[in-house]
Length: 138
Ligand SMILES: [Zn+2]
Image (cartoon, rainbow, N blue to C red; front, side, top):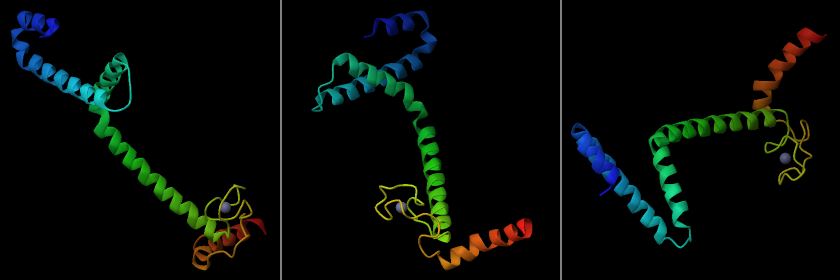
């Protein structure tokens, strides 16, 4: 029995349900540390305790973080898809736009106009820009 919990029980009997919950939570954490100790990675005991403590601190935030990560992954996928469409509209390498000489697709050669622009994407993105460009610069 944890002496701190015993002391808290004696001084604040009304906290009994919470103290019991804390003890159960601590027991779960110790079981997880035991599981980690049985893995093949040799980690010192004090580091396992630190890991378990940090995990316990972060656990309440986990669902919120997972939701944010999924939202950000969705945003990145949308931006990546939009970038690829624009690069195809410009006849540029859809992987790097000609900015990466290590690119497997174009070796950095795929600047706008290097490839034949995608017809539909050109009509969708470039033609309206050319119209507006001509209205304002000629
Ligand atoms: Zn490329």
